Amino acid sequence: MRVVEQPADLASFRGCVFVPTMGALHEGHAALLRRAKETGRPVALSIFVNPTQFAPTEDLAQYPRTLDADLAIARAEGVDVVWVPAAATIYPEGISEANAVAARLALPDVATQPSLEDHFRPGHFAGVQLVVARLFDVVRPAVAFFGEKDWQQLKLVEAMVRIAEKSTPSRWPGLTIAPVATFRENDGLALSSRNRYLRPQDRSAAIGVVRAIRAAQSAAKVTGSPAAAERAMHEVLARTAADPPEGGEFTLDYAVVRDAASLLPMNEFTQPSRALIAARLSWPGGGVRLIDNAALLDR
Image 1 (cartoon, rainbow, N blue to C red):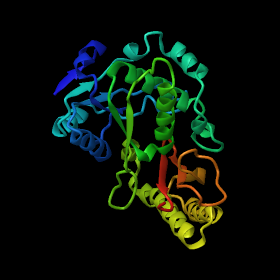
Image 2: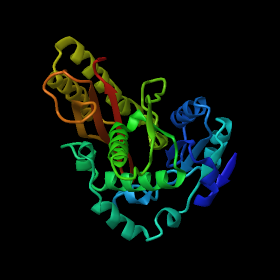
Image 3: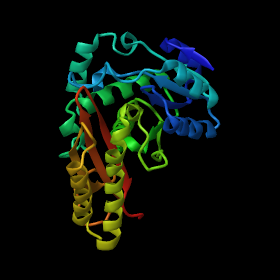
């Protein structure tokens, strides 16, 4: 396995399978790497904590950085090359100007639907779009794998690639985006690099997100109503907020049912749908934002 920093070192891996990450790898990332390895193509992994997708009030400085452990996982999963670029490599214009560049980019409609991530984390998807495009420009993969846990990010990247296909010439000709199902812990909690910050007493409240999604799935099957599925989620999450972990607080950003592809609100289950939740566990001096999603009805 090669570990490289410079874009030129990736030239021989064009047409590879690519797994872009911010590091702090866990079993969910390992599952992505295993799927990538199954393609038979060389596998490239990037580790880059992207500053342009963090607001000034967010946890860029606290985001876990575990490079040695990450490289051990990559080696165990048979990764061929790990790219660990410096911020100046991705953003030679500097972070302030890169943020300005990101802000000027038009986001696909799927990234700006009401009451979702773009509302609660303004500027986040602009930074994601900028960094993923620049990573693709350097790596030039044939396939890129993304986890379904970040469903809205996945839809943004898919839309970005579709738009690029229509340009002349195509920016990333033939690039395929391959989704991989969310990897969950034994109690159902979606794996996240930030889960390591949960205190022991936070676990039950965190599982409230999982219980809410399961309630939505049950309500969707019984009632056939997106509105009823949303109500079921809110009932579970209201109970979770009413009984927060000791010394902490549980607050909800959103719990909605949306069209799985467009992320538009839906009145009927006429298209594949997704339950989407974002909530926060906070305590003095710390906190974790939990996001999760799942399909409601198989169609």
